[in-house]
Amino acid sequence: MTTKSTSEKKTALLKWLRKVGVWGFLFFLIKGLIWLALGYWVIK
Image (spheres, rainbow, N blue to C red):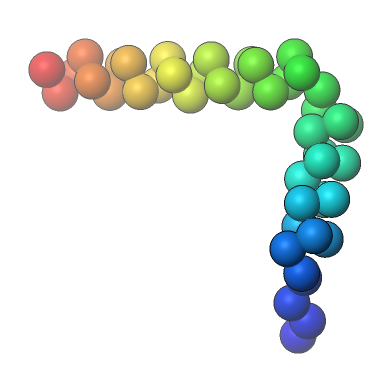
């Protein structure tokens, strides 16, 4: 079992972000914020 170094993890994250793109990132960000708002509304 091998462990990745911090720089390799950072490179993998950057590759993933480039592949998904800004729109994919925004989609998941907004989706997450909506779920948080729904959870808050249900609890309140």
